[in-house]
Length: 111
Image (tube, rainbow, N blue to C red; front, top):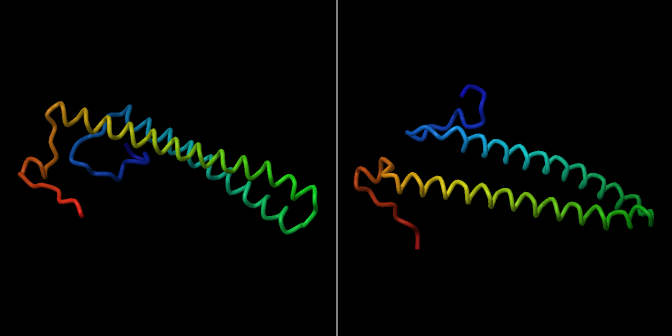
């Protein structure tokens, strides 16, 4: 997996190729949206500094677009989380256990 986003992760088990592809695709989508947001924010700032009424009016649409992009990013992360949880649950149900579980260690959650 040389050059892949997840090549540096050592989990003790190999990740399914389809899962890795899903994660990579989602992360690329997120990065593209964040890049677009950076451009939107720059334009919004320039319009704000110009104090020109037409530019300030344009900011309304730009801010709406920015908010929609943020919603998309949140949705993509929610989908990733759901996919990861589903994959983890499938591993648990198939009898796969983490090394901690095999050793009888419990994870303590802070109160």
